[in-house]
Amino acid sequence: MAEVIGVRFKEVGKVYYFDPLEYKLNKGDMVIVETARGLECGEVATPNKTIEEGELSHPLKPVIRVANEKDLNHLAENKIRERKAFELCEQKIAQHKLDMKLVNVEYTFDNSKILFYFTADGRVDFRALVKDLAYVFKTRIELRQIGVRDEAKMLGGLGICGKPFCCATYMGEFQPVSIKMAKEQGLSLSPTKISGTCGRLMCCLKYEQEAYTDLLKRTPKIGAIVNTPEGRGLVVENNLIAGTLKVKLNNTPDDVAPKTFTVKQCKLVKDGYIKVDRKEIEEFKNLE
Image (spheres, rainbow, N blue to C red):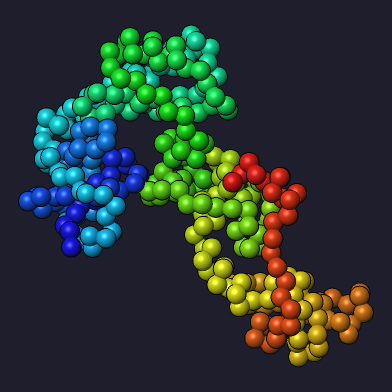
């Protein structure tokens, strides 16, 4: 067993484990730790706890110290520097006429590097921009191109549900979502209804997917052949949540409306299937 604490470096970011040494830390405490980027100041997201050694992918780095007043003041000064660096970088981008959008600027705690995050439709030759920025700031400069999901996470905003973005409020990492999830949940395959503000599939499609996957195992799909109390028929509609099926009976004329049965009343003969065809893949490939 190993004693660890979880530290987060961004307001809503991934939690990393560190060795607390003799420190007993609470959630919200600020600590100085060593990372691959050098010394960083992070917030304790998980207080002292013990985990199995097998859960650790690499040796733990120790906590250097609990952040003091000087450290917190330095962190606040870096925030001011970041705003100034953002304004200057935007001016330089305009001067170089680069087709890119600056999203965020981040100073490392020890000021050994400044990271500039941007979005662009394609590749951008920013070598001249880096030279200009390095000349002004006299430190290492790193430009990172990010996707629209990461941009939404950094900037925040309101989703179509009226609430703040999930990615910007509590999601540490993005979960994979697909068009098939939308089809399995019976949602309209309209880009405006299944995509978020970022223009990609809504992250919330993932939340109830396990429940829908379980229901689909027990519910005949559209196109399935079932035996009902009134004869055999074809499933033309199903309601996974209510557990009901609309069945077009074989022994009724074509102009007669399908009848509704519960899943328990029907016995599956041959199940249907849900698949995303090539046309849909092509149509919605930019959303995934």
